[in-house]
Amino acid sequence: MDATVRAQEEGDTSRSLYKHMLPFIFSTLSSCLLLLRCAPIALNTSQPIGMASYGSASWVTLALLLFITLAATANGDELSASYYEKTCPNVQHVVRSVMASSVAAQPRMAPAVLRLFFHDCFINGCDASVLLDATPFSPSEKDVKPNASLTGYTVIDDIKSALEHDCPATVSCADVIALASRDAVALLGGPTWSVPLSRKDSRFAANPESTKKGLPSPHDNLGELVAMFSRLNLDARDMTALSGANTVGMADCMHYSDRVYGADRDEEIDPYFAQTMQQSCQGPSGKAPFDMQTPMRFDNAYYRNLIARRGLLTSYQTLYGGGGPQDNLVEMYSADGEAFARDFAKTMVKMGNVPPPMGMPVEVRLKCSTANY
Image (cartoon, rainbow, N blue to C red; front, side):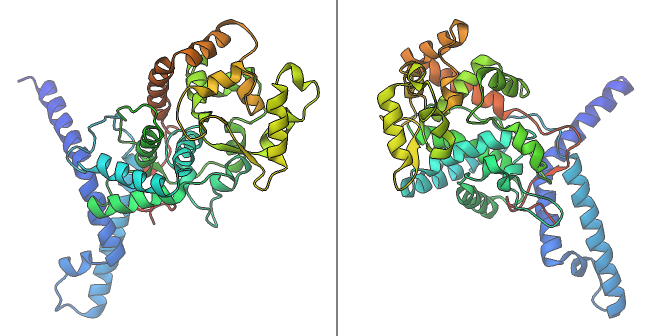
């Protein structure tokens, strides 16, 4: 056999072995760091205490160095739906089970988890950075104004806790969000799809200014939305399909008051709808559902509302009324729920494939709200 070919095959084998050993190595090193049991295994107990302390420190230092190396280099796997087939075969069942019980107890958790996925992927790719709590050295994306109303963190924590019990240090928080958002849609009566897996979790959150600028605003116009989605390599059709997620959930009055109280609104908004939404602003909750007819069903009502000039936010209604291909898309989705479901599922996979920036330190977090050590 040619030496070059043999070397290449040996390299491929090594990389494959390395990839499948990663979960085991993470688990072993995590246990060493948490319990400091590596040193007693390696040391002779008859050694003097001073020597044992030195050996313990050396082993812990080595474990830390290996752990950091793995975290920094574990960003090269291609996404695959079968990624956890051998290392955590029950991952899909665990996620679906926890999601089902959480949504049964609190139905609003379904749209909440779906929204988490969007807000995560829009900032530095799908890396679970939106889940990180603030530290003295790093701010949190949670605290930036567009994310202040996000919820659903406890559901992700519950899923991660169950997975850590079944297969420690194996499933990333970024993959948990991707799977949970798919199941959230299905639990609301929407489509399902195969989720490519092997994302890794970033060790750092994005800075507040990048987070603020990277998320769509309730007041954006069509041009601003197209430009923002294009940064993720998502085109106008992708944007229109993904916007259909806003068929479920609710909004605070401060996000739609400009639309329902705006000047000359009769030309752009149904007068009865505007009056109803004004009343919701004065109600006890100060909120309104995105879709009044089927507020907790994942369907194509969002597009029918746009055609009827009943889009709740300015950034929703801007998708319809300007004529041309954009209007044609909205009209197609409003008339054909199956076409919307197909495009939505396909585009969720496309958005979910957005990676973190090249060189971003990544890992498989043991706890979704904090980086490892």
